[in-house]
Length: 286
Image 1 (spheres, rainbow, N blue to C red):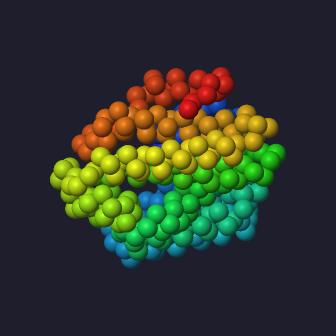
Image 2 (tube, rainbow, N blue to C red; image 1 turned 120 degrees about the vertical axis):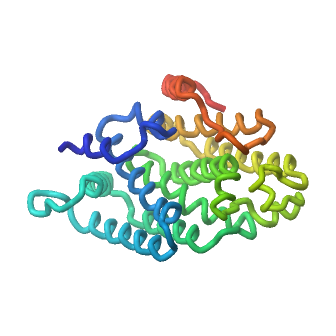
Image 3 (cartoon, rainbow, N blue to C red; image 1 turned 90 degrees about the vertical axis):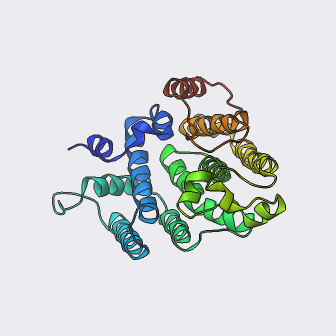
């Protein structure tokens, strides 16, 4: 089975925003980024889908062992017991020289999800966002290729922006799982009780809280744009498409009056494709 077929076999990218970002990548890079994304989803599922904290810890330990193996060897005739998922990931980390430290930081972020249900300050939350989202950006730029090392700031800031949008969009579903990612200091400032998210009737100055958080997310989008070196703009086209899609999601949250309860806020598939095509053609998405 080819690497391309292996990657398509185990990733759900076709039904996510990621698909529309990856579609214009050259085949080799698309295979690699899909392998990384699928592994990140599997690792994240250890925290979100395991029936118990003990099982989550065991699954995360298995993910760590798999990364050990990816960096130790390449799949081949002598080690046919590589799963298709692991084979594609091993090929990616070796072909694109992906620093292992980014995967280690990702694991630390997932461990935070296993142990913390609340974040006291934005500084606390930003560490979590960096670990679970900015690290994926830092891995991705190694696959995309770049000339200017300043691109790392772009990847880190864009990852922060995307994760903050996820947090705002998923307030209700996260609360149902016992997690509230908005900093406690912000909730207190705007007199919003986190328990009120469960019945879709947020208390206090909820609208002011959301306006504040949306502006924070926008500030990271702006920092990302400021950090994108002109010489690397074309190689970052997949990241730019992702940024454009999440920017539009953020705008939709605003347009709905910050009502993120009930049906999950999504972008229609035709709109996603139009956004992707527009950015690929050189349109400015902000």
